[in-house]
Length: 184
Image 1 (spheres, rainbow, N blue to C red):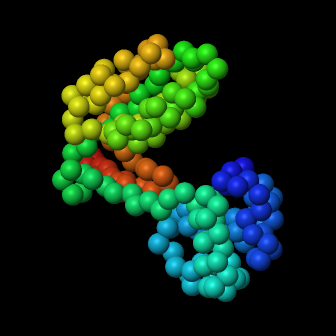
Image 2: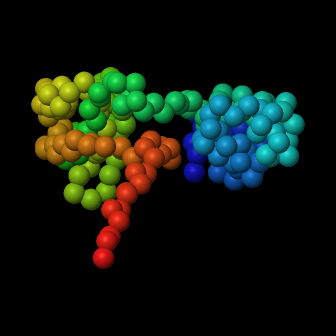
């Protein structure tokens, strides 16, 4: 389910239906943009049986209502020589009185090092993905900014050694393994 800011109808001018019952053309536009944010209205129109103008209007309404939150570029920093270190940090938290997980999540996602925050089921409550210039930077961030929060009971840090796929995009082509010829 998608939750727009106003939780009402996206529009009545393009026969939009409530977001919970989104029509297939709008769903198709969203899937195309999620896969390729640079797709032009003309390209999308050719795939959805809509005019470019209808697509542009639909996208504008989806942006205005908060369904489309952001357009993103996935960068393979290794290819440009930037050596960022990523880590997944799992947190066990104690909730404060009259506050849920949202309060701690809001506090954590304001740190610029934090790339994502997710509520989990299982042994840990919250998962963070963070980025730093070195393992030491990430370790200090966890020790000084995250572990010191009153609600945080414990942390478990997992450093990312290599990313093969990010947001549906393969970052490294599969390596071909050359077998040595066997002689008899």
